[in-house]
Image (tube, rainbow, N blue to C red; front, side, top):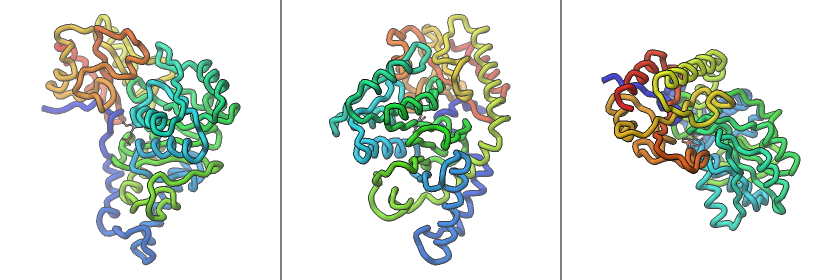
Length: 376
Ligand code: PLP
């Protein structure tokens, strides 16, 4: 049975061009970048070139880019540094963050006795910016604002510049989990007022287990992982050489194709949304589907029936790979913390996240719509 993969917000397939770029570093170019002889020098140079490329794309300085093991490590590093090195004693976040942030801010609150506040989230899945300003302005302690750019479950986009300006006004530190947007959205970090931002290779056809942390050059933090002097003393451990090469290559490819790919995926999302409304009475979208929302994600609720109760399972049986919320909750039909936060009375509905990539075809979307007819 041919499978249809519509769970690209969970992870994406590796681009063959990216694999080609990585291959020499999995084979003949295996030197440890810390070694002083030629093997080491050539891999060190490759890493520095990758860093420059990533920095150029994000309009940052190469010195502001650190390679990590992925989005989770980057968020942990940023949040820990804000508390332990930058003196933040009050974290303001939202209840719809990815667990990489949510569990980290809860950990900081518990173990470091940092105050933790959550900004209100409206029914359309956007944060209440007025409440955010109230929280920051009313804080007697130095604030870390940690708010994600695109929500991985519902696709809603944060107005990063607006939050950045608020943080500037009140001298707060700003971290944004941009795992769903790096590789899918143009950034200009010289313009946006932000201190920390992260990215993860496997969300845009790069390898898994590699990511970046952007640290604004105007702040000084200590390493989160201690050991050797890699990453300019900021992130110890022998570099994930082929991962780093793959990350940079995938980001270059995604950036070069951004205009055409984003327009194409937006078209697929709108087409699927329209077909769902037309053919499935009672469907409801979660998040600001037609508004400020990322083109890769479409989150829809189907009315709960005896059949739809088994929706994820039945889609899987039909060879269709989608998720009920974030990847961590796939397989289980429990309503996620994100859906509950935007609608505390959510019941009698079954939420499904469809997420697209540049390889998704209209035929695949049509096949999913046809399969849904029999199972909702
Ligand atoms: N943040 C968001 C919004 C994500 O979607 C994910 C991945 O699921 C992560 C963080 C974690 O990234 P990684 O898998 O690279 O640790």
